[in-house]
Amino acid sequence: MIQYSYVILLLFTLITLIQCEKQFRLGRSKGGNLGAPAGDENQKIHDLPPKQWFKQKLDHFSATDTRIWKQRYFVNESFYDFNNPGPVFLMIGGEGPADARWMVKGAWIEYAKIFKAMCIQLEHRYYGESHPTKDISTKNLQYLSSQQALADLAYFINKMNDKYKFNKQVKWVAFGGSYPGSLAAWLRLKYPHLVHASISSSGPLLAKVNFMEYYQVVVNALREKTGGDECVTQLKLAHQQIKSMMKTDPETVEKEFRVCKPFSKASKDDIKNFYNSIADDFADLVQYNEDNRISADMRYKNLTINTVCQMITEPSGKPAYRKLAAFNSIILEKSNQTCLDYSYDNMIEELRNVTWGSEGARQWMYQTCTEFGFYQTSSGEVEVFGDFFPLSFFIQQCQDVFGPKFDAGFVSEVADSTNNCYGGLTIGVKRVAYIHGSVDPWHALGMTTTEEEDAPAIFIKGTAHCANMYPPSASDSAQLLEARTEIRQYLELWLNLP
Image 1: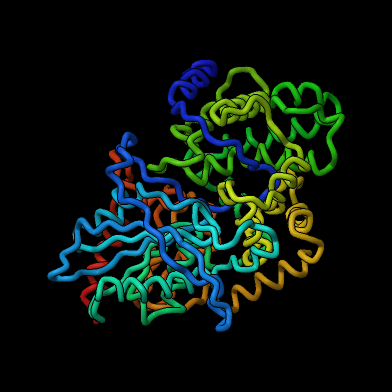
Image 2 (image 1 turned 60 degrees about the vertical axis):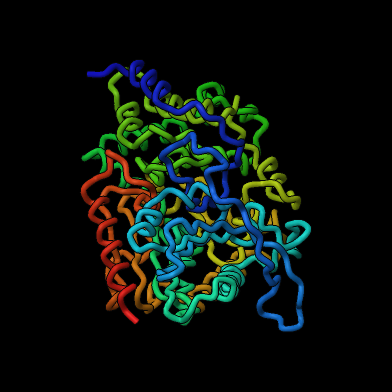
């Protein structure tokens, strides 16, 4: 039996020593957030396609608004034969900066080589370097929506058709993972005359305010990957011990979890943030389990459900809460943080910052408050994580960041409007492939069974968020390899259709 101390040493040794920016995971709805494709991590910047700029409309739904801005995009023409034009593959940007590494790596690049496709990546408005307005004040964020983003894509496609003089036989195929996976399906729904087919990976199609299923999938994934209940049992015990000690011995919890300020100075909202944070540690571990990515979440690289559950369940004689705290310390170390900042006020202050420069936390929160909800509450797994971050906690954040009108009624109404606009899980559009992994919590809001002819759902047992999009690796499961082949076969079928 591997000793507990050795497991800790092994985990520290395995984790890639890359600093990642400090980010507030606490008490805030997390997006899916596609990472960068792994592979040659020493890829030289001059080997990547240069960024280009497109003159985009600010408001597609106002004929009298003629304001424009510059939107970033990338193009890879290396596989394309202009004498015999093939398809155009369009990767849709999402809730973070576009990454030029996707222009040379990833499953879609392998497909592009086969079909001799031109590859284009368009960055999402308000993220990365695509700044439509002078700042991201609440007033200016009114132009940030999925509908405006889809109209961006449609306008862009038309202009690229003009630029490259593509005829009507040139077929566009949209690719997207996570929120862009939803956009890929919705683009095919709203603009079928422009987009011939879409590959939608890990896309949540159903807007849901109280996304309680998220943590239910987290718990189920722990059981699925470890083949039993022991890890879940120890995780549940750890949270029960923490809850009890917060009343009788809070100083020990402070020390073990390396918090930035004592609990005696914490507000009720701070405490909710603390519990949300330690739950997030496991949630993020599950969401990105064993994928082949490079991202801001490098603190999770080589940390898997199995290695961490081994640490949690190791019979070392140490109480469960200390094992969980040790995992938390690993995350802090690899995040380059000296202590766990669970301050609610600090988080809100960061999210109120209206200047450009963040990775998109404020912008994504705005989209959750005005379109999707997606709040990963504790109400679905009270027995394991406790009910310390209910829906009201997230609604309060919408109001504290953007104003009092963003209350529960408002958020519920806009989520209903989103489902009415796109159809939720009854989207009913052909030539879209929906790909999900059983370990990815976001599959609970996606299409996991085939409901429409020529709109297959590919459900991959054992894989996590957007796993099918990343470059192949030697550790890929047979199910993942089969899914990538199935996607290629659908592309071949659809590209041969008029």
